[in-house]
Image 1 (spheres, rainbow, N blue to C red):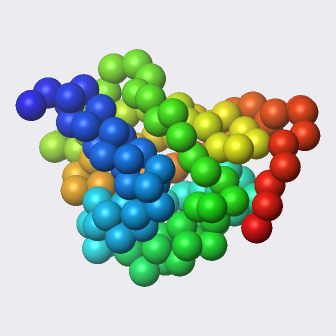
Image 2: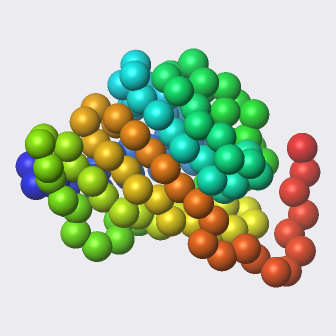
Length: 125
């Protein structure tokens, strides 16, 4: 499978897990020593979730409020030393974001808000 196919498949599975609120499947896509660097998109803060337990806790606290969707590969992934790097875009209820995925059993994810929606959208708890 090519790096592009790997990245697209990972994003599609991850999006499906999040869309169905299947946090266990989403967390299971990350290696035990993984990192998720949230730059405001989910937590409205700069937060690094280290390992599956912290990634699970972050998703449990934010998933229903953010409703992330439209995870799309952007550009061509690269492979260096067996690690695939791929840029992607996504949306939440209130923003559009861009992120970087490093695939080595879902080793590292970082993302940030790219555009904040100016119109009011009701977010209920």
